[in-house]
Length: 144
Image (cartoon, rainbow, N blue to C red; front, side, top):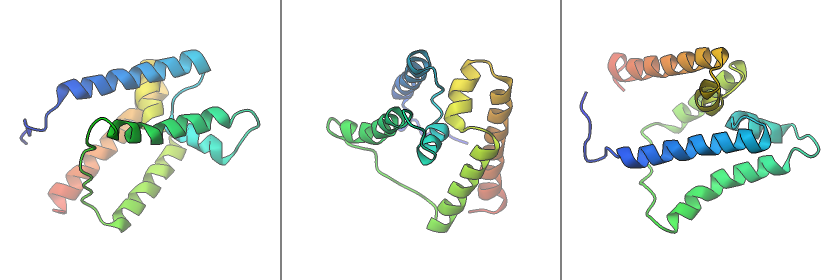
């Protein structure tokens, strides 16, 4: 394994991590809720009176942020090395895993681990392990 040192950007990665951490901390402190994307979007699918506006604002912020960034800098090139069928299957599997795991990577990996949640530790270990195993199998065993 080699590192592409030309594409290695530790400062922007650090800044992104700090922003995600600060946003998650502010969200829980100001709103009393965990910033798990699947839970926020799922709440829009089962709307509860008085609970929709902040969810819509959160999702709108996720959509608007890249558009705002594009005003100041070029967006990175989009490159997906998979067929639409693989993307659909992957999306369905992630959705099923999110449902069974009672949360997504942002809810468990960012917010749950910072709260030292044992359930989030187990969930994060499982989804990271499954991701590592999938990449290994796809690239090194099946050769795709």
